[in-house]
Image (cartoon, rainbow, N blue to C red; front, side):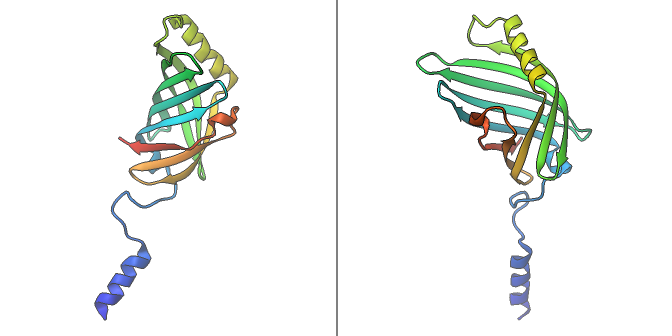
Length: 164
């Protein structure tokens, strides 16, 4: 009878392999390096695929590098790479990222100069520097989130991340 009680207790406790079960979002879980994507966004004139690697520190700062592949209808794809830094905080299930700096790294299209690429980054940062995402699920190894308050409905798609 004791064995049956132990089995029932384990099942009721929801014990699962380390990192496998969903947990409440916390600063501890978010701290570290996360790779998110590829995330696919489809608009009427283009498809964009984004992969971002973000390192969140315990002091609530972050650095990230994003690779975006933009494929306009009927035209060759363009790959853009940029980096960013800023601060982050958690409010319940909402992850808030405040971008302080964004740097253009490269573009596969030679018509996009370093100056133009950086101007586009600066303009975007001036337009919007605070981004919010609702954490749908998180554990020690993976996370799923969806943007909140996006300026573009096409960007409101779920992203899957893994801790690296």
